[in-house]
Image (cartoon, rainbow, N blue to C red; front, side, top):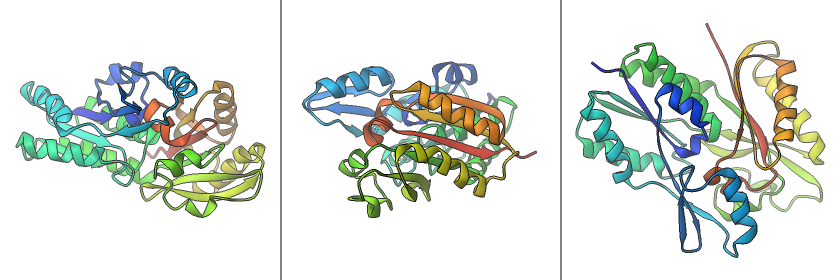
Length: 284
């Protein structure tokens, strides 16, 4: 039997070279500016998104792929003999997982496909997908690949800062961070993804305190010096992203590390000035 094929969606923000090296298939979400619709990562790049945001009179919104978008990919893989592990953005954040589940039912191949909720987003989801794809590359079975994805998802920690909660609030993705809205001047939220939703981790005075506080919070969750896989996400300033990566590299042994711009769909909800880290402890 052909090896397990791993499918994800564009909110994983996976760099093209990683997708290609591991044979990961990506189904794009959509970004809407008024009546214009762009396929995330296909018809719109991160740079193109920020340029469009500056020019457009419309606030962007996003939409999930249709079940048919998934079904096309699933049928192609099934025809080539691949079992399929399809791993997606948290069901609490998007209807994407539901579209994938509908497509899996339409495929009518029980036992030949597993749909996994990463309970995460961006390179949090990306790290889960990479772990699953490497398991598939080693020849793991479909249940083993899905179990690896769920195990990494369960260990994942995501911390990030935003310049403003406006974008999360406007797009209805603020989760349990709602209490931070309307805070004091220059109070910056430190956010996390918890139980599949955006929630408050803390708040600090001034943007310069966000990174130090994230280092402290992460140290409480993953002891310093441990081996980790990590990805730093940024919006428009790669230099800020590099500063975060260097700071966390001093605290942990990074067996995997990535510096990745937020893709258009995730950026649409996070807004400009967002920077953060997704990380899990590597065991064994």
